[in-house]
Length: 71
Image 1 (cartoon, one colour):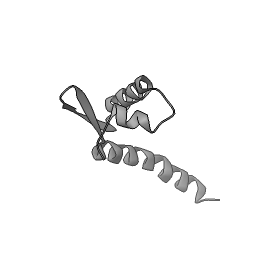
Image 2 (image 1 turned 120 degrees about the vertical axis):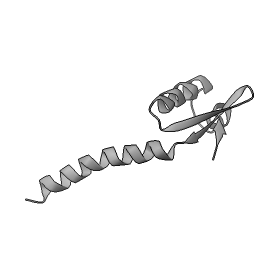
Image 3 (image 1 turned 180 degrees about the vertical axis):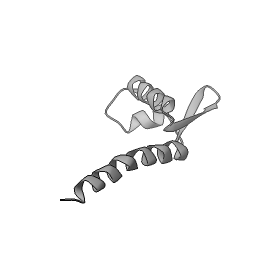
């Protein structure tokens, strides 16, 4: 479910700033969404972003399957 940087960092062996930096990369890639709530941001997984990632990865899976079908 939705989590703040502090909530995410509490369960990880990395610093809060490191989690924040990783979330920015994921946000820029469209894999998470951020919603401002007061002085903090709440992050959620972007279903649309992961759908795009899945479609992108499928092209490699399909290519691998096509290449191995002749063996």
